Length: 533
Image 1 (cartoon, rainbow, N blue to C red):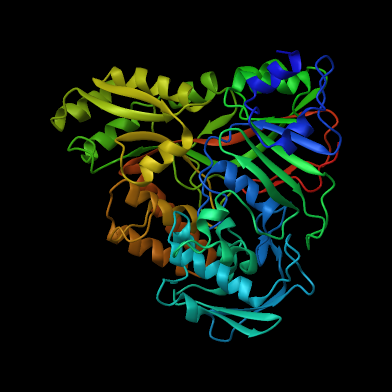
Image 2 (cartoon, one colour):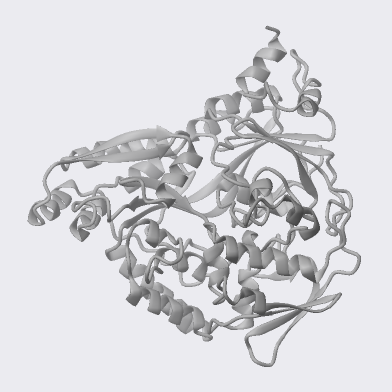
């Protein structure tokens, strides 16, 4: 096997479509470099479940959506607090305070060449609610249900569409909701014929795209590679690159190797020691990007009596070596943060009341009659989750709690957690839109297990907290609204089946020749359209 073939095999690209291999064949075995006009990104894509914006809810898919789709309105690249036009040229609020009328961009087209129509907006948003996949709860915040959504999104004429909602929220909040990836507009004329049964094209969109973004999916091989080609007719403008290849490199050490050798232009998800080793190296640069990602422990309260006991939740808070994980293990890649709102969001708490205190945890467990226990602990089989899990295993063991670490493919662990088929796991959460309710509605809402929130996945039914969350989102006074979210955070910080540990900081490694790469605070704010090399 040649040096080139060995590199390709180690990166898991053998077996990808012939078009992809043709591009990769341009890599030279001695002085490796990626093909002109092609951006190669080395990362793990094992978490990808679906590239349908009505379903995709993982880091890889969320980071792809801004490059594949547009929404009616979108967050500004430089300031996530600002909302700017997307496929809507303009909008105005209805006099009832519960509606918006959007004027669509003139002559906007999808990658297929089909023109943008009000019917595409209606199809896109209504299918999210009817499919009721994981991110559907975001649009449910507007009071939309399968029974009323068709009446809530109406065509006015060929250039205008009206959105109405039943929830007691104002137009500003509705606009924030519409910036979420789940609100992406898909080409109904392309997707509808692909429907199988009542799936509204979901099966097809898992591995294809039908958007108006700067790129389109030309090939996706799970756990191997995602290939995006330029959509030169995108209403947002043609990208500078011909193609982007997200190459699956599950091992972080291998990612360091390929970025150093020049077999990749960008690498993400490297461990802290690999980042340190690359700093100051010729040919590469490290970009540090503030992130709104929160890392937390998720406890299944329905799994057994121990995990459903609030005393166990409390003890768990004192069995995490927060400072050791952040400072010694991750070395600046994350900061200790113990509440569900990330710093940078209005109302976010900045104090961290919990420290590692094994003696206190043991007393809490003893007082509650909780003895030694073995708990299944499925963990994403990648950095830094395995390293964090090993730290937790060590500290929990000191209190008689054995965490049985079970490494697995990220997508499979997500599926188990969403189905409630787990005991205890380490997860991350990323806001879906730039508003405090994006996180509050996930962690502090579950009245009756109707919507697939994180609280539901924990088996935690909380009607009183759900009512308070609803009151917070309705509040129009910014100071009072921030205070309500502070109170919610303190309550969940004190007692809930979530142990909030860290807020992330993304460190992305780029080859020196890469220009124009942009990434924002929210996970979906990853942009490849202005990248040049």
